[in-house]
Length: 115
Image (cartoon, rainbow, N blue to C red; front, side):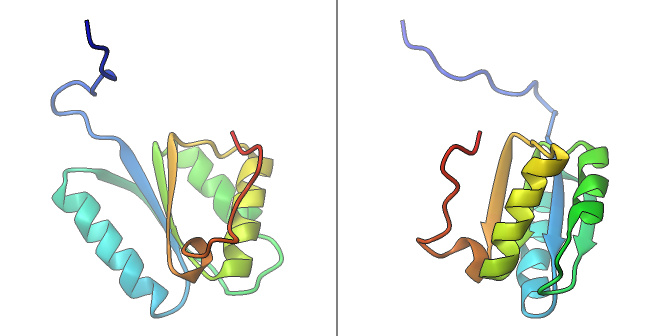
């Protein structure tokens, strides 16, 4: 007997949150948002942020309050690391994080023990 993961009930689509900053990241975020909507996913939040900021907790707390199953972040390397670290600190724990842009496309981006 083969075991396959349970699929969401027909018609159910998980909500998505998109976080991005300045162009060209906004273009990549817009493409991700359009793709999610085309697949029937509900966008529950979209936030932009300033590159190089020291604290993203208020933005991430807003995202947590929206209750997304998926968070798609588009950012630079230093911002991506801080965004993920602070996501953990505020308790933002969607079923998955997806990332785009240089921040998430580098082999050096790893979080040992992230659960």
